[in-house]
Length: 198
Image (cartoon, rainbow, N blue to C red; front, side, top):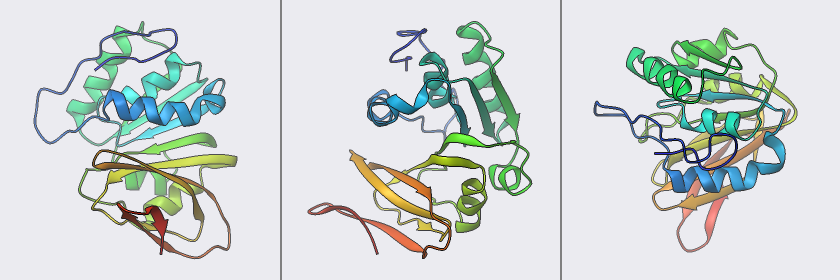
């Protein structure tokens, strides 16, 4: 696992030494940042269910102004701090060891954020209430990106609408924007037709 581009391009990041944590692959991060490229420089970003911190660290490497990392696992929080140290301990990266749903609901990570990235446990979709709380932390024009397994069908609350969905292997990146007064939608993936909302 490495930083793909920017200040720390090529820097190796430490991988987890325990089971149950599936970091976002280099390939999927590259796909993500190909889409986000014009938005990252100078942006405030929230990396929730952060795991290794690779997504947030990639954003910092590419010029993000600030990244807040949240993960409830103390081992993951320590791993993120270790990976930040490998990149020179930037003071614009903050690590919170906290349950993501509670942290978002209680606004423990003060927004607003231009980009919010959520990568929950691979076979589980976050509750609509968690996505709704995250939507409340978006700045105007901001994006929330949810990474999930292709077989998972997240329920997107009315505070968000899906603007794009990209598949890479078994993973899907679902890009959402704030949509006050919208309708709840369930995201499904039809391998013949591409992502769609029901």
